[in-house]
Length: 400
Image (cartoon, rainbow, N blue to C red; front, side, top):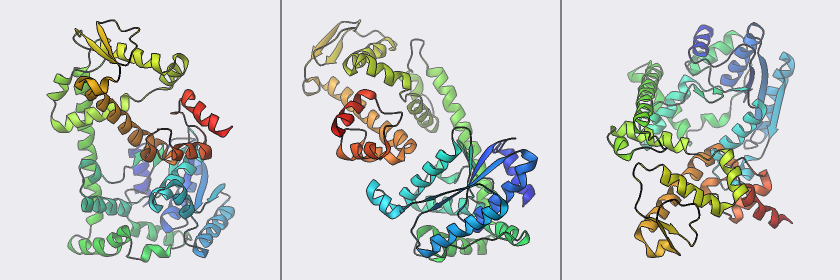
């Protein structure tokens, strides 16, 4: 197994010389093997290894037993350990999230805080986990991304055991006398993933004993296919780019559908507001920023318009003939359509990109508007980089 893990680390360039690695350790066989393996690399690669354990407080005495087990092991091996104990059920109620979603959000917030900007987060996902994930995606309906399963690397999160089955890992623990604990809830078939693990996978292995390895090969092949489609999407964007800014819709529409969809996703990522844009809005105010954005959009068009309809009563800085229309979305179908497109795009960005990046703020629920829930999240966590200072004045006024 050691050679397989080393090959995985090298193939995906997971860990480099002198890296700080935060290992997510639950105390189970997978994470125990991961931590032991990273310790074996500590000296030859000059790694700094920190163990991270999250006690979700969901399994009572058993959860405390797991925490104590991890503490004793790390103390014995001289491994720095960071522990966070949080009642995830209570936290889920506060955040209005499901238990699984809240647990995941809390875990990765904890890991990212410890890893910092330059650290690596190592999790113990295995080939068996990948097979289970692909099967779960199939039951719900999925596309190419879903069939790729769990990515070996995502940003600074790496999964060195992703090519090893659970059986290989348990054998490794026995061979090297690595102690671990067992989560009793993993043996209960009432959860979807456990049902796949305990009932579906064994049935599929009767047909093909190497089923997990077959799924791993398929996932790798599909990741390569998806990478090619993404590369084609970037080339399509290059052909569609206009000299004055923006992209040609006619060029984009000629792309094949899978490529076109990925190109649009790339555009959505590229169009996220940068810090300098937020600073500009705060500096010149939201009205002037809106007019400036209109003018920049006009300058980016391939053809100069004969007339611009502006919703409102101000048009300073617009360099083409224009007509202001107060409450324009009620009087002009063109303005109404533009208003719908703008709101849908804005909400999609907030509930998609921002909600994934800052899950603790629950952007998917309040969509960034000044709701009671949004202010409650600001009270709890403070502002994030996506918050404008002028928006925060309303929040700060509520607190005084």
